[in-house]
Amino acid sequence: MAPFTADDLTRTVTDAVAALREVADRDWSRPAAGLQWSCAETAVHLIADLTAFAAQPAGRVPDSWLPMRAGAAPGTTPGDLTDLIAATGRLLAAAVLAARAEDRAWHPAGAAGADGFAAMGATEVLLHTHDILHGLGATGWTGSGHTSALILDRLFPHAPRAAPADAWGSLLGATGRADLPGLPRRRHWRWYANPVRGEGVVLCEISPSAAADLHTGGPGGFVWAEDGPPEGTRIAAGMLGLAREVGEYHPGWGPYAIVRDTDRRAIGGIGFHGAPDPEGHAEVGYDLLPSARGHGHATEALRALAGWAFEQPGLTALRAVVDVGNAPSHAVVRRAGFERDGSVDGAVRYLLRPR
Image (tube, rainbow, N blue to C red; front, side, top):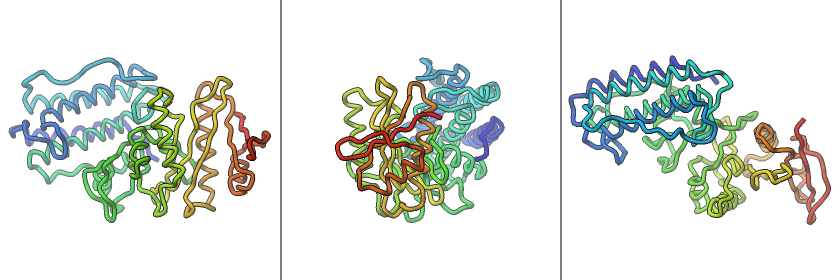
């Protein structure tokens, strides 16, 4: 996966600003395409996002947004809004260049380094330029295919693609702005600034909104293999909702969708039963669709999730509980490095400690 750089961001902003300047004489009080905002309000939102994306890595904020507000003065003209987009885009590019390789900062889509914030900024620029231009009737503009491909690889590893040469169309499809062949338009979507990557699979955390959709019979923003989603994943999504209601929801320590690299179909779920207990132990479980079994995906997902877990503070061991007669699942946990640690209620308990 190629890194997303400050130069990639700068090119994206330059192209978008040039397109927006061509329509600066039109009525930006008109609605932006597909949004409840006007074109002017969409531009102000974009300015605020670019500013926040610059501030987060610059401040190395670990657990929340910086309490700041950015935007535009009332009555700012479309031309001046375009100048502000150019300026805040350069501000983000400067923050990306100044960041250290190890720097991470908080974002609702996952903690990210400077490359993640650069990709997120470019995504906002591309999509909201599209929304503004289409709202103003300028429908001939298309975003850079090269930049769109980089964004898809960096932030949308779970999203199916359109034709191989149409990365821009794939990005529009991934964000609910266009249809993809054979698939319904997305109602729920998000990007992943910090997905958990394994061999042949990527794990995407199921957010509370996606969990609510899954629990009530929806796809949760994922495109599933034909026999999915699995019932266990729907149940886990419901448990996440209950945990949130009682204040026990801990981001990162809930369910994830297992997405297959080859076709970007979700093939199962994996995750934790909760955050680590006072002893530093957490329990992990998984549920793979029958059509996806026998290819090592569960083992690779478990290895990847365990690797992520042991990078978090406070974890001392992972537990897995497997029914006595479930031979394939015993093989999965053993291949992932777990060792038998007794039995409980007719099942075998396994334990994995950091190496």
